Image 1 (cartoon, each protein chain N blue to C red):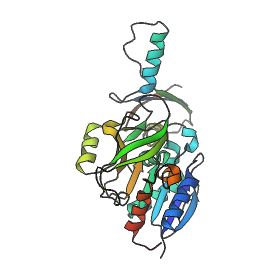
Image 2: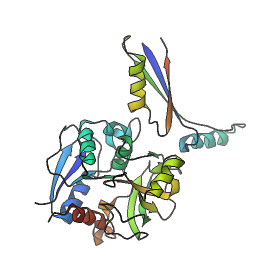
Image 3: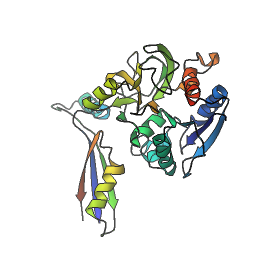
Image 4: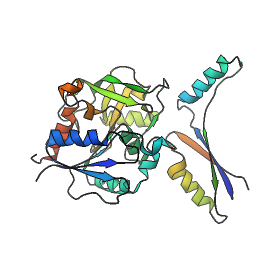
Length: 77
Length: 226
């Protein structure tokens, strides 16, 4: 089973990387960009019997730092 | 009984020897070098130090992998027993990732790696690490980090201040840290994480010895003779 874990910074947490990307895009001449937030995509290939609870535990204990990040689990196939 | 310390080395630690030398020279005690894959710490420790560096290449998040390494369970247990635990730079990141300290360390607000001496003010003298300083004392300690931008939510920051748990603050803009926080204590005041490197400022040849006081404080608090 393929699983994608989307990790994003919580609202209100400063994102210097996103800000630098924003700045670079504007420097390239793109306009109308209100905000840029950079996150992380982690793709897992796991056995079919890995439970939702186990996936959630992986995210909560390692893949995301819930002090600063949110996560969303997406099962691809 | 003499002062006994452990310095943990993770793959990618690079300040572990400096830390061990500083502790040995200042305390005159025994310093055990402990590998991250070890499951147990030596008996009778007075002090555990997590050094700076780039453990596991900063993969995932700075300190994230190291915080889940086998030795950290032993460090968490010793911290719960009241042993003094210091995390410097990457060691601070490891302590927050391990849940021993609140908050997180984000990329510096200016995006740049910052490597220079910085002015700090001592936030409290009420800890095993800061007893030899006085509150509001201005000291100079070098920093060298990319992810030193301390973040915690407002309620956590308010609580840290109300409980007198901000050990050090930057006296100048350095990395965008919330409320200029450079170092924080846990609730029991026996775990300190800080981005500046006290082990790099322990003798005149380093440009100053303001960091020396921290190790002297730990030695005095341990109540053992060197």
